[in-house]
Image 1 (cartoon, rainbow, N blue to C red):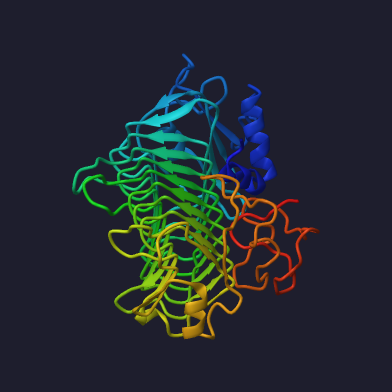
Image 2: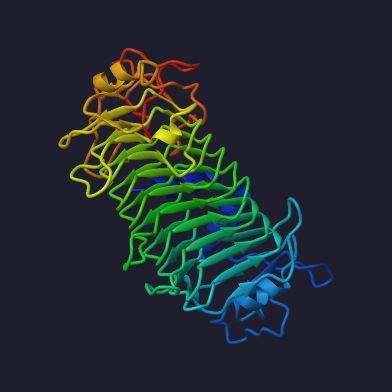
Length: 444
């Protein structure tokens, strides 16, 4: 089965990049431009006996290392890397140009293994890194600092850092940067969070990634996706499961959109919004996380948030810490609205925590807080399987969402168009009264 991240990757891949990847998959290569002009393609092939880092990176005399190609590449050039296991940190000598980035593309069978970092993009702009398998870095797998217009697409980053205090590292780390697009990557088994965005980064898009089994090991701290500071960040269409801490974590950030994610079986919350006001948390599917499924809290609170169209199921059952499918602490209530969420527990008792009060049912919660969850549902969502959260026919989540909620996706985050199920009466609202709750749109 094609993974949700790969489906989203195909949707987002520009036609030029698709052509390059298809050519590699077919065993083809692109010819270099004439020597009188700057080559449009630089070649890296350590398996070619003629390779040399003192050459010009042509097809007949390619560079031996990605490190060399990154130093010399300029705007508009594509670096094509042939099969092999490479090492060394590729740090860029130049920025690309607006509309003409430096693009570094891995062919089939390319692995970067054991480097300090595989790629380091510091104070450089307009760069694309695509299709690499990166593992066993002693530091971050991919590091972006003080950069603008960077795209990280379709990479797999695993086992970054060491599970020792002071040596843990995230797979992908975006620091103090703008307009960074983290698309369709897999980040797994790293010794800190899978993806980190931090230090006033803005306009960052984290979309279609899969974050699995990231853990420090000696303390509960590693999230699947960890947003620490900044604003205007979009986190959509990701799948985050079996991470040591929360699936998606927001800390001291604001004005972000968390939409259409599938978040399950994480060691703390599903989605944890801490001291991060004015977030829109919309249309997510959040299942079987250890503590609260969707959690708003903090020392200053996460006020002014919007929760809508989420499906939150079996979270916090027998939790050693906080139970409930949805929790909003006392400092996060002001200006926060929640509506059209679907909650369900197959065991346990706490559906909602609002302030300091826990509620065992939607009815009890709505009676005490009549302006909240006026269109909420407490019902079995009818999932397709234990880890397949597509909706089955007859699900109460079908045709019942608010399509006008801030951040509501059309199509859904995995490319499925919003459709009106003829077997279900529309009870939704907004411009399309037939959107479904949760991350997946039902296809009749």
